Image 1 (cartoon, rainbow, N blue to C red):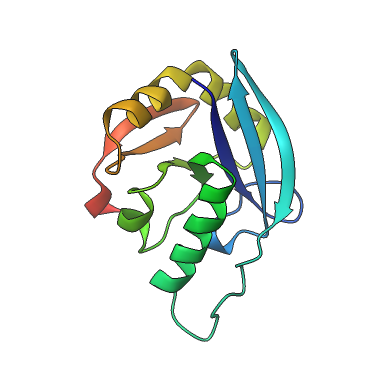
Image 2: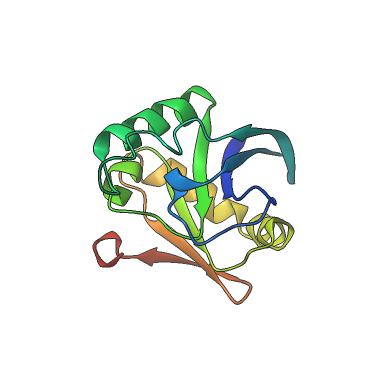
Length: 146
């Protein structure tokens, strides 16, 4: 199964401890035939969207969701997700990482891509979060506790 994955990165190309919607840029990867290849990099056009209000604004989340769905993204990878996680998990599989280096994250994702594919296939519109910690990808963290 082909899929696209968005990494939320800072200007230096590393994961930073920010909510997905507050990333400086996104790297969009394409997974097919056992390979995860960078398609392109995009500056986050919604980083400063409606910045006069508190984090977790649904309007900002809705804009980011539409933006990434138009790009056929299915999985979001970030060090943090905000209050809109439940809303986001209706559209994408969220993966929370503790690593800063995208190359390390890519290697771990490649080992467990079948899990992400199964989640997309078996739980449409109610995806569970995956958590990557110490080189291991884990599933089924309750969305409510995040």
